[in-house]
Image 1: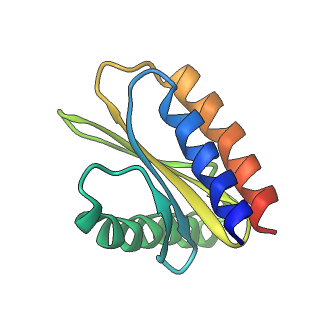
Image 2: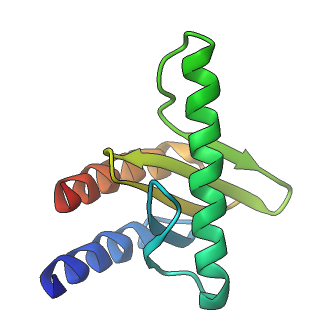
Length: 122
């Protein structure tokens, strides 16, 4: 188990090295925090629950509309972006990036990290 936790931490650390990533978290599909790199750790558990709810609602809506499972959910504000992607049937990966960051590299790194997380948990 410790080995898996260390590997999840490495996924998050590597993802945080991508330019513009301020924080990231691995979250279970039911909203429990697996691991995070959030500066406000006391906020991490509620952040995990809200992120899972957001992605779950987007998936339900998209499927009900006949558009399939969405690849990601992006929330944009004047202060930055929150991006959530599925990481298999057990987890999701969430990042917070600043507003100036281009999405191309972040989305590429996020998809790669989500695949790594999926492999670790399944």
